[in-house]
Image 1 (tube, rainbow, N blue to C red):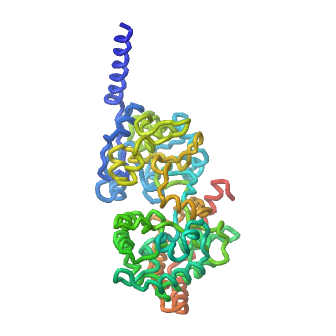
Image 2 (image 1 turned 90 degrees about the vertical axis):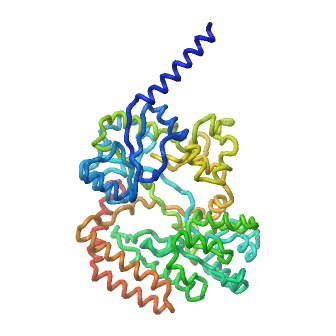
Image 3 (image 1 turned 30 degrees about the vertical axis):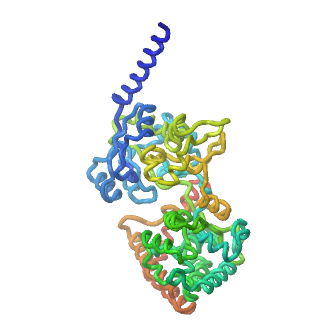
Length: 517
């Protein structure tokens, strides 16, 4: 009889939990990153069960930024929105009164207060209130940029012991290595070899590899906290000359300006490229294709190159903002703000983060001697086919309120996939050490909207984007400098002084707001 009663009680509890999910509050959620994904995977179902909140996704059909603008114009935005934090759309939503002042509801979100800490201070709007929560926030010292080199070619040129040493290369040493490889292999498989590839010049800034190995930042700040565009950094021409030298020596792909991601992957997969200046994960597709052809060492791995005379610990190859990529806010259309706060607070909690980024305990992971440990072959499945594994399991499918950190209790990573590193990850962590800096203080300082300064700023960016490839592809250093000097004249005519005055004011106000003055 006791067993029957226990079983009946268990069934009643299951039915109650199911009913809570089915009959609970429904919140609409716009996630600019969700694409065509549906909220019906195991993690999504478990999240709704635990919070008693049903989530109805609003798909970002077409251009997410355009849809956000249309929703704002029509006042038909959903209960929760996830936007690009650095975009002007966040400011537009705040100034239109479309986002709830979260500062008034922090007592309902104790996990948010505990997890976000100082980040809440840094994401305050100019009126001192919080209207959104950052996503992918917190210091993230993971490696990013470097010279990503074919491992087999690197071993051939410097020996396996040196390649595996973790010791950085000076720029002069590395350029000589490129020259020697190019001389030894003018052609491979009937194709002319390419020593260095670059991404397309569409970002409006010089490659993060060349600026980073020289210790440069996104903007130049003098001793009085006056901010200038990168072209006025005393190190700017040094970095440009390094790129130009590669071009004039025939080491740089002459068609680099036409590269997009797809074309770059194709070039890297053709077996005739030594390296690319990029983030280390940018080469994963090409590496898999090359290794699948039968050469397990034909993998692009990260190596650290340091400009001559620069302290290896002073490089800035991994600029990341501690304020994250996205902004998530509750809109004033939400009729149950308390339920939204409850849902957000659970997602932001450590338990919620483990559900979103590690999956379901006992199914996807377990504790072994107190340490979070993946169950079975789930990490191998992800490394073999990340897209399908994410969709099937729901793990890391919904990346909301993510904190860049490791678990304090056992030291494991915040995402299950990166707890077991493959060779690409291991070499990035081995070689790209001491390269991180927090770029948050430089984030979103640019003038926006239809102001005079915004129009001037866009003109300055257009001028730079035109001059940048011309400087790199100049026939000589003298020609490179001539393009640079003309750029300075054009920027002056375009009103760069007003732009920099505006950005300096924004920068200094931020330092004051954050208590960094």
